[in-house]
Image (cartoon, rainbow, N blue to C red; front, side):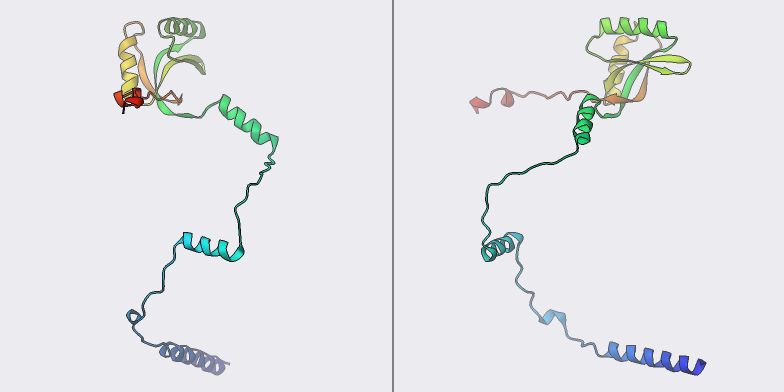
Length: 174
């Protein structure tokens, strides 16, 4: 049995080695590369050969109603991103609501978010992409809300401010 195995192994390796010697050693640099084609040429050739003519058509979309509902829900509850807020209070509910009212009266353009973290409520204000923006608000409100500090939080996407230039204001003059 061992003798048969060694003979079969010898024949196998002998055959593999003969096959490897059969490879030719031609220099690949002797052959010029073929004509390269681009995608547009290929598509044009296919259209010409198949006589495909562009036509107007109609598309019928069949989608599950749950997809539409999901899109609507996404609009109602927008994606939140990492950002910064200024925490101005942490304590009982009634005091948190009072401070929230005071803040909203003085800064109606900024959001004030009351959240519960057992057993206390925390009041965080603003939606800032950078810590520098949050620092500016903190300096403004520190007199009325001492002890406020900046925290990382998930924020609602604030609108981007578009800087207007003289060129963009009067495009007809250019």
